[in-house]
Length: 79
Image (cartoon, rainbow, N blue to C red; front, top):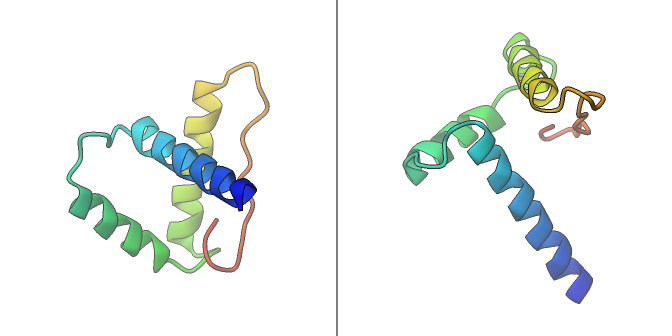
């Protein structure tokens, strides 16, 4: 059980870091949740999905100039 809690805490920490990286740390929680719900409705591989993924990849590259680009594993539900 401890490993599950540790994994869950790490996932939340990483997701929170994405909110900060996007400049949304002071955004209203309802706004953030609404935006995430809209993102979850995008079909993986759709033009909007590819465009947003490209923006994210560029943001990762810009923040880590001496490292290879970050890759997020694709899933059927959400990358």
